[in-house]
Image 1 (cartoon, helix red, strand yellow):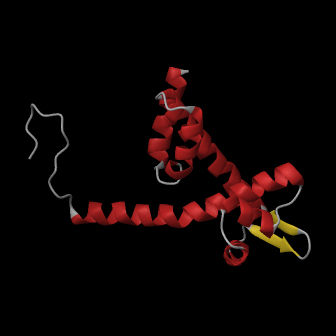
Image 2 (tube, helix red, strand yellow; image 1 turned 30 degrees about the horizontal axis):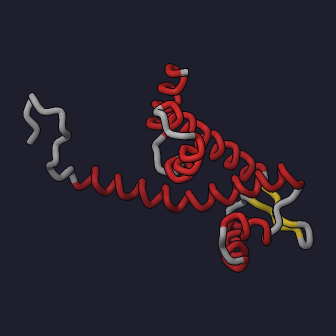
Length: 150
């Protein structure tokens, strides 16, 4: 139990429904993290060279090509990418929208970390993991904090 003079958080076990929701949110974030990483990378590759090839995706993510092929199949089934024989992978409108949203989340988190004094190269790397695991409310707080600091 927290007394009125302490600023430390209460360490009592939270309500089961709150616990369930916290874990559900974390599981959903992990599931979306990979999807967002792929569509963001595909958008970057297309922006840089006009197309995203499976071999380039594998090299950038540090995974085997069969892993990429499996994920691209899933992304196609979800309506996020189109695969064209001998031409690579292209984002659908939904895929493009998700890539823009993911890139914006990354930008906000990276700017927030830099505003806290984190070196830019570390902030960029850390933002890659954090961006997928914060709520819209937390992301908005990061954005507002950064605007006030800027």
